[in-house]
View 1: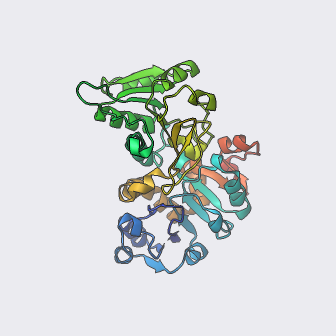
View 2: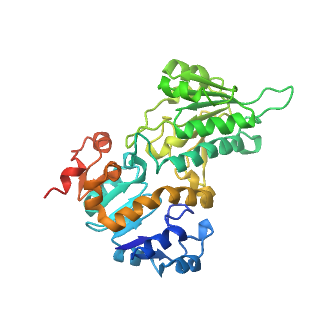
View 3: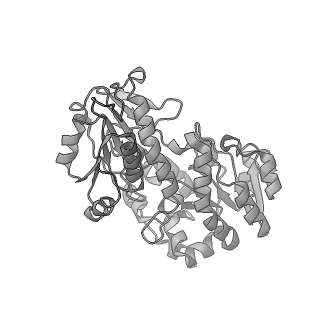
Length: 371
């Protein structure tokens, strides 16, 4: 099979979907690997390294898309790439369809098989989302701390405080991978951290290892509003796989927050859990509503591309090898994990949460290839 990796074109997206080690595994198995020229530059990987591992370098993205049977990316196709997708081509990447009806319609029209990293499930966990969630959770605190600085428009609060001065107050909504890593990072800086979730079993689990400056609370609208009023930094870390994130912070809540407080909505890929949140870029990461700074960069890990690229490809390569060996049809039919990643197949929505998000028909993925 021909496996292709184009250069990412999203603003300030420096990750790449294959690394030389992965190329070597694929080429050693007899597959042809096409890498667009310069695709790895942002992650510190040269074309020469890819060639040494067995890849061929394509001069343009168009060549990669035209020749490859399996496209392996990091981010969802952008409008300039819609026309490059073709029927029965397999595209394996982060899609986050619930955040974009335009993207969904384009992929349905293309006839491509769209397998999403973010919904691939193994034993109730999301292994291809986990490494980027770890990065995003840690970065959320790092970015929040930066924008709390007065020159950046924030309150002028040092999250860790100093002796004699109380530390910053961090509110984290959601105790999944993002929330847990954000809590560890913020607690490590010395902040007072409040981590909210509706899953009591998860809170009990976290109570065994999170430090004492993390308070674990059951999440209710009342509790959220109560802590919003005291928070210096709010991190939205809610995830419902494949579905739009629930709006936990309303515009009216902002009036009760401290001027210069910061909200980092990591759930922005799924529409955001803050009503006033909107996607931003690394070029223009923030904006203010009611005196509260909002950070909504939809590809946060792209800022630490080398770490993120290797973290992501460590997790994806086993599935890339499977798809290259067996193709989408056989993989979806025989492997449960790959089946959970199938969001769109041959013009049909095959992930229930995506279909429900837009009120469109759902077809079970195992039924698409029956005939």
